[in-house]
Length: 286
Image (cartoon, rainbow, N blue to C red; front, side, top):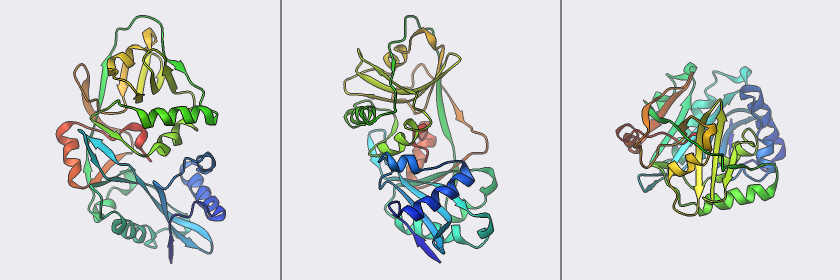
């Protein structure tokens, strides 16, 4: 049995990885690779048999700043095995390899579906909770957030530069991994990027029936979260944050529960999640 990693430039293996991911999750990483956003932060660990990817767990480095302190975090994802190769211990072997490579971590986490809840505790993972912040709004005035088309390299470069220069902070936010956010905004969320000229602020958000889900904010000058939300104008009547705000006043907080999803963690850093009512930012999910 051979476990390969860092093989994304191998066209044949990458296509085999994509074929398995598409069959299992309906996801294809090829466009992400072609646009240049599949970078070294995302590493598949794959069992290769006869030149084909038959089992995989991907490791994504997702360092976070938590209450002002940078923490080295890793996320596990894209866990998959070809049906005819299941129950052979391949995922267990990959997990053992990943465990060695993440010895320097402050924490490791993953989001598991309900069919494998008994598997991850064997590797020291524990169930944990996340929390979401929401607020009802009473806003007036027009929307000052202009939608940005994310279909060309020029727009990608502008957003990437905004990420790198941003001074906006949250209680917990991801750093040094723009590729993961671009996995979303160059594929599934091309119509969810906005720019407000008077605030010099970028936002990634989804609006449906007056409800705003605000995933990320990037700004190079001091701007309050309330001003960013207000810039969406009277079209929104409530907001749900995809991150834990630095100042939670005015927001209702509840435990985040998603269907067929359990948050598993390993590492002392996650004690702060429970105590401070935090969450992994919504666009930091690999």
